[in-house]
Amino acid sequence: MKANVEIVLGFLGSGKTRFINSMLKRKELQDEAIVVIQDEFGDCQIQDDLNNKNPIVVINVDKNKEIDESYITEIVSKHAPNRIFIEINGMKDSTKVINIFNTKKIKSICRIDNIINTIDTTSFNMYFRNMKSIISTHILNSETIILNNVVELDKKELLNIQKEIENINETADILRHLYITDDKISNKKEYVKTTRHGFSFFNTFLYSGFVLFLFIFLITMSTLNIKISSAYLDRFKKFYDVFISILIQGFPFILIGSFVSSIIQICISRDTFIKLFSKNSFLSCVIAAFAGLLFPICDCGTIPVVKGLMKKNVPIAAGITFMLAAPIVNPIAIIATLYAFPGMVSVVIYRLAAGILISVLVGLIMQFTTKKDEEILKNNSDIDTCDCGFCDGKQDYSESNLQKVKAIFVHAGDEFFNIGKYMIIGTFLSSIFQSMTFISSNTYISNDSRVSLLVMILLSFLLSVCSTSDAFVAKGFLRAFPISSILGFLVVGPMLDVKNTMMLFGSFKKKFVIKLIFTIILVSFSILINCKLT
Image (cartoon, rainbow, N blue to C red; front, side, top):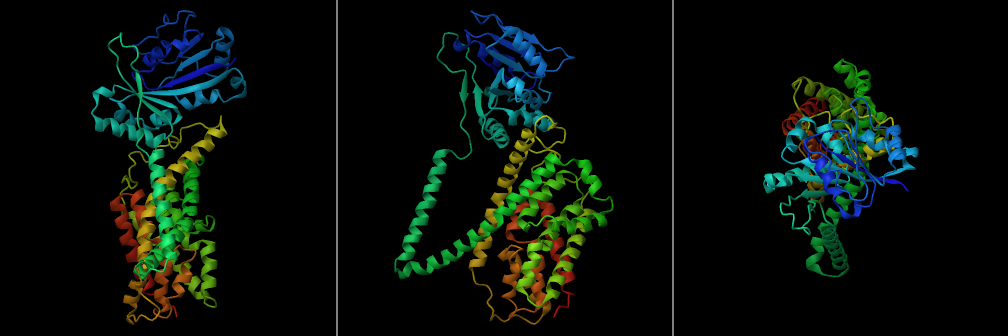
């Protein structure tokens, strides 16, 4: 029979030993042979006299020894336990200990029953600020999280801690420890499960039902010959079609970008990026400008990729250049432009040349106008780490490829949902603008090239068309605008639009984004106004 293993994580003084003692008191464990392995020693001691039928074996790990495969095998063969509690040193990498139980040999004699993380809520914020990587790894690896000393915090502080934990691990059970001072009260629970602050099943069902009802209602109304509703339904249908089409077009690229960002964070070391990008800012920008040929992703997907590059300390100039140039040098966008403007190869050449030049110049300007130690990423006190607990570059995944894959998916999911909400907001706004008729092919526009260029730049921002299909939209404006002004739509649109702006504000500091937007508009206008394309 395999031994059940309970792995207990947490820093010194977080209540690990106290939790194990509370478990040893449980009636269902009275008949079991139990071994407790302690790799950390605090003021509290294991109460080895609690079990009446079988003595509890307490083993203290020597300072010179590590808990490894042979260590566990020796304990199981010597004591033949039904259950093993392992109290892990809070400063050690819990992933290494957990990976021991994924090996074939250990799986044949042991199975992990639960991974518990005990947290002292009074010191959580201090540890989270100073040792975010370690505590995030503990939380991510946990199946159950115990919150101790909750009575010493007010409700708001406790909820904030719980939200931080839920951001890292969305599936773990979170329990609050309650002190029971009266021994006569035997039916009172010592640990109470908390309510999560995410969407519950009921809320999800309720919102889904409402959306389904609205959809059926609109379909039904559209089939009826009601004059009052037809005008509004037509407007809504146009908005709905645009909204869905942008989301369907954009979400795959965001997902790809999130996975690329995740792979960059977890699989590629910082030293590799240092070698890849030259210390020469201009040369690194040139490399970044043409990197989009290798990563054919839309402008929606470049932002999570650039965010991952920034966390690896890639130069700002290179990161910004890649973000702006990649959608334009995308092979799919190049082919689409050729099809949209047959016999006008000069449009493609000007679009590529102007796009690359603007991207490089904006990247260099942002590099030289940003202070060396200035923090540009939003909600990121430690730029080298993130909430997934795997991005500090110190984790060792060589022992388990499965753990590396898990880390990639966890990080990609976190990035996708973080960026995705801003994508939805931006898409909603751009759908409203596209549903409104601003300019038709018969609209008269002033012959002033400056005015027409500004109008096209504004339209590209509001309409937020994907870089792989914007050429066909731009072609529709040829009757109203000169071809040189159309370049404003083709070049600036992939760099800056409503949905991208929302995503930028969600990923970077407000001051940095405002400076970036101003620089893009200024540099783009200065270059495009001098393009004499006929």
